[in-house]
Image (tube, rainbow, N blue to C red; front, side):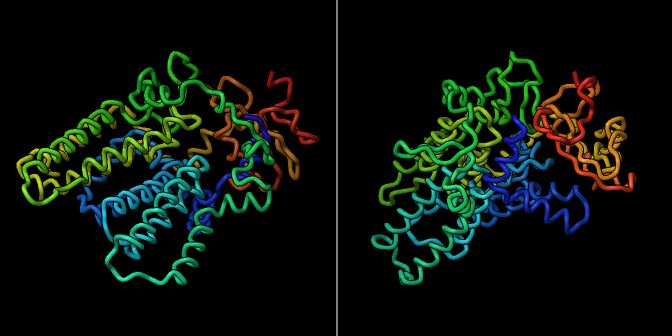
Length: 452
């Protein structure tokens, strides 16, 4: 990644999650509070399932944390999980609109809007999907408004301004980029009707190979890194797909088979009914998962599942919804009662916890900020910084062993800010770069001789 890439991304990519992290840091005075953005997204998820689907809290918590990528992200400051929870809320409300026959309640409309706004203003990869589902919601609402719904309908004079306001909220980042740069997806290259919009980056992912095949291999964890982490890097071992996997392949297969089984059971149950048309919930869920799969399978970087966690979250959640209502409609399937199937989910979670390591799951592994700074900051680099100097810190991404090189890893660069080192008792300006040619007249540390 070039040094200017981060600058371009900061200028055009959504920053809502980073703003929330900064707000929590400011309120608490502790940088560790930034992690609460991911943690609260988990809370929102389990409360939503309890409110809308009557899924027991323990069941939704265990089943979601059994997804390795969710577990690693809920304990980190990555912003993928909050964005994917947002698009999940939009997708599920859309699903409820499709299987329902009434206009959404005010609460559902608010949840849908906030979910869409969260997704589109946190992750750029989720913006096209958000737009797609908003179009589906719009068409469904029009159908319900004019054809189906029997409930009192609000006047269009009140609806249209509300829709306009909600659209501005949801697509605030693309609107801002259009106004400032003439490109809603700035800094990414976009071509419309032969016209190339202003851009700074042309992702190499546009030239990647068979995206659906790579996505399927990644979902089923075929030739992916043997361990689980936040970004699923292969650690330089190119025998494994870099940044692939993270859903736990057997867990995915279990849920797909469960959803197919529930659909077959629903079909058989409906055929036994002589008058009532029966339920279509399971088959609608199965079709919905199939349709949703088309998006990540054909998207750039399709194998990097942390960008598309919503797919696995939706698969898990739709099964939880069907299972939680099975005790009402399908009592003959006693093993599907939450108290029994919860044990199955618990087994998967235990497997994940045993494999994932204490870094993400063991409370005793917690370290204070002071201890983390002691481990993450190299004293020999910090000692080279003098009062009021303009520093250029040489870094490299994805270092396997930072102790063997004189420069610093990318993930630790921000810890060299004077904010974290009041003990030096002076201020300085610091910039992290991969290529020292971008340093200008700044003092380079370590020196070029040591970096070679």
